[in-house]
Length: 259
Image (cartoon, rainbow, N blue to C red; front, top):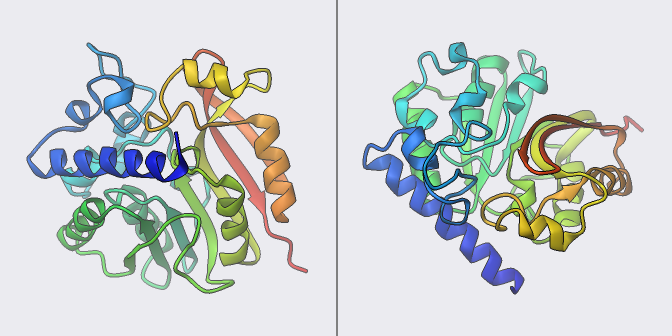
């Protein structure tokens, strides 16, 4: 499938999820359905606990709008692994309904700031409504792609993302953009789906669709090599849970050198 077709497929999936949430669907209802017809979803009959709001500590959801929790479609909790501190500037790539941006804004406090970038108008509208409902002002949601982030160089201290990089059709561009927007000494704390090194692209595709967060996943070695090629140091990939045979939710950490 051509890159533009894949991107449009992903956009349609996320737009549909946002619309579903806006009509009152729960996170379980958004995730329910086949992997091919949801944005990182489940089997035909059960809600997949390897994706979605269930991966957050229940305390994280306190005081968050219900719609922000319902729109959670990721494979981890990047705000927890990024170890955010008061006053930091954070960027969430593929921010969706805004849950990780709102959690980041809470962690960095009034002296910090959290940006979200998403290409889907429906998700941006939902995220902005969620921020308003939560009364959070130290956030901004920007329309754009994760391959061309609409922020200047050295704009943030931390980059997070939750199960979105696997959806990109140009992952080297994403990793390069992450490096560009980070200030020297900045860091990455990303959750993503990662394949075991022995799986070929064809074998990954057999386990799920691109829009279902499976077929487009990098292997562990590819992640390490790609992050290093982009300029990062201290790159680490840690599996957290299996989401498909030989494919895992994972935490990816890295640092941008100070000099």
